[in-house]
Length: 202
Image (cartoon, rainbow, N blue to C red; front, side):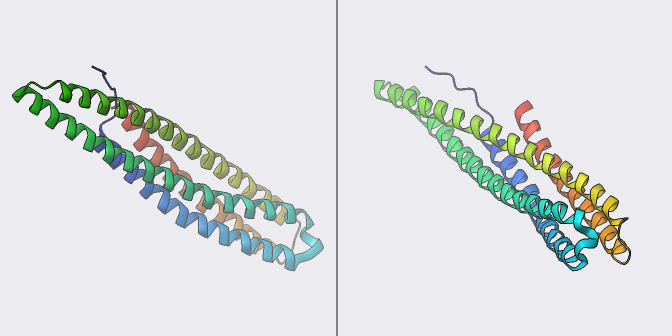
């Protein structure tokens, strides 16, 4: 009989839901980040040649914000897949339990074969689950890297802003917003990673 090592289906489903919740909140902030990026592009366009150095920075920032939104959406899709797999694993575990009870009451070779087939499917499902969890971890790491890059952009904004006159205050405020939004997203990502770590250590 195959022995299938797996994470608790209930814990897996709960973790997937918690991760999705963190990333949903992060995606809402990422949309604010995207709006801040568009506003920065508008200011840079209005200021013209006086802030030429900010043009590339603001374009990169806008691209980064859009990538963050897309990545957050992708992660939510993966979380949903993990949750669905967890439910399927719970159903299979329940079915095996019923089959074992049936086998104890009535000796039946067919039951043993059915259990073996189900456990084979469980093993495949568990492997898929592990792949998705690792993918989830990798993409959360990617968002963290984006947020680190975003904070570097904020520093660049402040440095470039010193070269302007009437736009310096606006650009400094934008840099502050970038910092705040990036930090909030980073905290949600850390929260999501902590949920995954607790699941993997259980």
